[in-house]
Figure 1 (cartoon, one colour):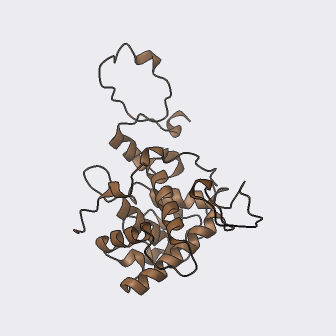
Figure 2 (cartoon, rainbow, N blue to C red):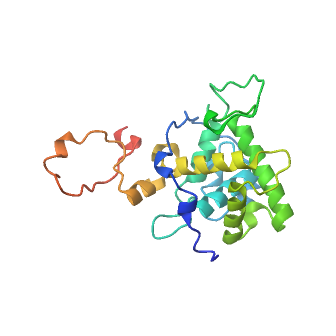
Figure 3 (cartoon, rainbow, N blue to C red):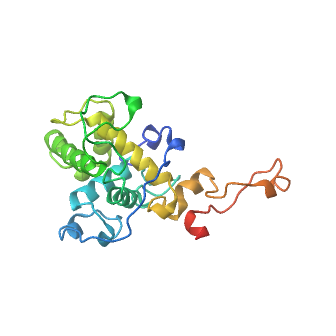
Length: 237
């Protein structure tokens, strides 16, 4: 598989349903580890923007986002679109802390349609998932996930998606599903949440964004294509 030809649609299948239910955000900034500046990948957002991600996590989410959403004729890369920033803000907020989630137990293996059924908060779940993925990657490829080639990262994600990777004491398939979901949410969400920078995915789809009514344009654009500049929440603030 060529390193510049990763098929994004294998990862973004069903993406039109992504991005719903975005969590409340925090607005403050926290101090990030000093080593983050040395390990953050090129093209990532400024290190001081991270709210809760460690250097290892920021590198992982940047690498996974760029593997699922490589830069091509359709859009910039996942990192350039701000997907890791979106993930960081979600994990730093109330949703990441498990707000409104029942976590008192007992915990049993749930059905796929029952959604999240774990004792961990989303923040803890993703932190554990990154560590488990890197441990498996080191054992399998000799390097942490973010240090693999583009082709190797695509292969690793496909192995995780198929449930064939061997994670010690961690549900790798559940992690991949949540990683894919939050990556899609970051790519297609309103830019006010940190992802979809410059409305890249909306421009790619021709999605107009926030406006919810077009009654005043029906006659003008009847049987014509409607093309307009996408508008986000920030454009109405």
